[in-house]
Image (cartoon, helix red, strand yellow):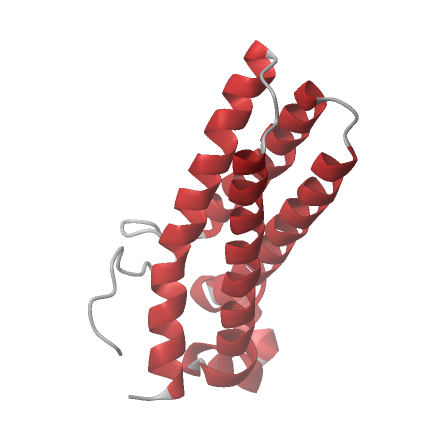
Length: 159
């Protein structure tokens, strides 16, 4: 067991918590926005879980990015060459930047939900900001069958 293996394993599995908390936050918000339902503590808790799981996921990703990942060590050894390699560029720039943007949107959304004047406004802000965040996250995950060095859906063992 290496620090890299443990971090990669946790990062791989935590993505499912991010997706689950996004669904549990966004779907009730869509329904609430359409129906004018009350924004309650349950919705606040799910939104908080979504923001927290994305934040933890980002910290794990930054550890992989800057410390543990042999892929990133290769990219950093010759960054100019890495920018010419689609897989290395994906990991060195695209994946990380999109995830930082997504986590930023989640945090902005959470702050704006708190400040929204009405329940409908809270639902609308949650749908927009959390929806954009999860769309960016899903688009930036290296899914199996995708072009950029796909990863397994369920990492069953430590690398």
